Image (cartoon, rainbow, N blue to C red; front, side):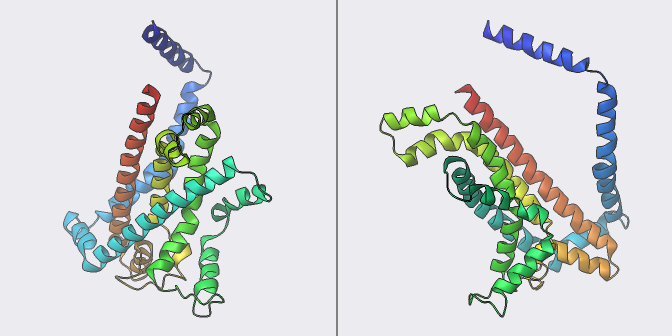
Length: 280
């Protein structure tokens, strides 16, 4: 009976959606807009990267300097994303579960990296951790400085992905587990974390993809040292300035493929984990 009712609801939902006024017009508008701002630019970059043939594309992306830059880019992006997985989840937990003076201010500050020009972040970090550091810590032209800059600009993705799920989380299950003698660590690991995991993965994927193509926040603090702190966006700019647009387009395509693959895998994993939790 439950399966029959669920199937009837899905049928009625699809039927009502198909009869929404202006449905075809709305779908056409969405497709047109996505084509203009996403599909056409991506197609143009791909076409440009292959304009000299597949062999030139392969030479551009397997050049030792390009490979070293891509390796550094992926490494620092993964580290920044992992840092934000931990700290972003902790911050979201505190914002949802704790009350303290200035909570609304802290909540607003989370979105500051979205509003702040990223090069300003690089300037601030350079002023704080540069050669004339007022705190005595010098991080400019180091991978640590690059990771710090990327962690700053990608923090909101994890916090804002986890926060709504925490707000909607049923706390009665946690209270029941506590009444049975479960410790806070066990409650978090066995009750809370499985529910949060899909949103954490989603936020991590977005943070990684954002870090992968970041430029402004690392342009000053990073130092742009080939094979050490130079990231892909800096190499792309250098190739454009030295009249190598095809090579720049090839590196851009590789970044797009990496970002798409990571987002796709994490999205599928998150969906499976969410379905598994619903079936429990």
